[in-house]
Length: 212
Image (cartoon, rainbow, N blue to C red; front, side, top):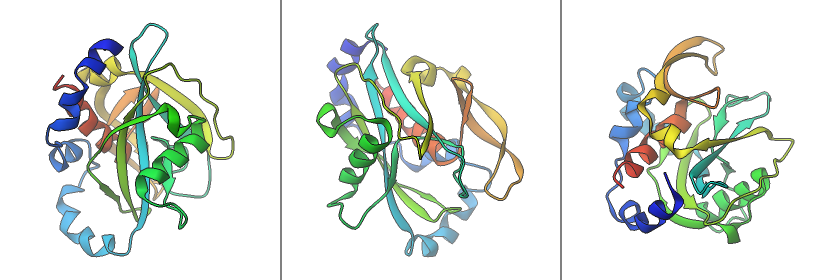
């Protein structure tokens, strides 16, 4: 998708209702929809986090979306593809601030380079007990990334056209937080399987962008 077309039509994205849970569940791991009511009590004591889905033009003025591959660590999201983001700190004034702060820390993009378009639908992640608040943002300039070595193994830049293509979706075998192999709906982007909460958020973004 060309940058100028995206910017000219950006108000459509900001003004339409969010697709919400229906789109999220389309890319959810098996059994998630049946467990939604069960999770409501757990959500009351969940930790808060936020992420930023950041779009920007490349040198050919085509829109891109940035992801990170997390480092290997003793946690349930080890070596998973995700959006830049993290846990809300006590000193953060709000969750948007958290998303922008974490994006700056993890990939080196300062908040002054980002226009936040809108919040997206929240999502609960049972294995890590996080209630995640995603935001959609855009930069109107090319971006140059610097990864935070402790947390980020790789910065992954994906053309928006690849995400919009239905060929990027499928069912793939992944290792879960319980160290089990499970087949899940996912995106296959830049030789990476994008699944779980990140895929559920991305499904809503895809639905929004397809309205342009």
